Amino acid sequence: EPIGRVFAILAVKPAFWLLAFGAAAGSMCGYGVAFWLPSLMMRSYGLTLVGTGQFIGALLLSGGVAGILLGGTLGDRLGARDRRWYALLPALCYVAGTPLFIAGVLTGSATAAFALFVVPQALVYVWLGPVLTAVQHLVPAHMRATASASFLLINNLIGLGLGSWVIGRLSDTLVPTYGAQSLRYAIAAGLCLYLVAGALMALASRRLARDWVA
Image (cartoon, rainbow, N blue to C red; front, side, top):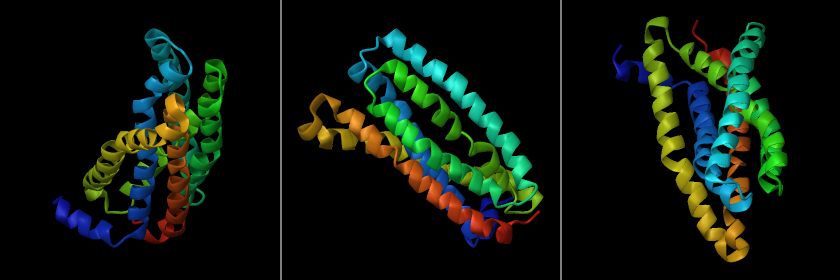
């Protein structure tokens, strides 16, 4: 289906824009933190390059896989009762995970940081299954692939394009105040983007049933 025709349908649906920009805010944070976390672990926690790789690999394997599986399973179960849950579940997970992530960034121990990171790492991956499912149901069945592509284009342009730059720029700005620890506080501040993502997803949940096609 021509992208112009699909986008014309999506353009007038508030749920699409709220889901797209909510996911983009979450991805800005996710990509930004992922880009700068190795530097943080070596600079502020004293890990070696190998230790940093092991830390991040274990975190992604445990938290990331659990979050994707949880999102798909729980999203379908709750969404079958009420379509709003396809957006509300990610909203709740974003908000619940943010303070744990911030606490992990601000702690002084790599072990404590890992313990604090595992749960929110899972929570911020919950959105993938439910939100992509919701986006595909905002258009007729034969337009779903193009709708998903449009959504991912917005998500990646904003998330990949701005995430690492915003946190890096903020870190540079904070150097006069925090010195070598400026990256720690830049990441902590950047994690608040997950709260923005949660708010936009919550707003999307209020329009989802109205904009749902099939």
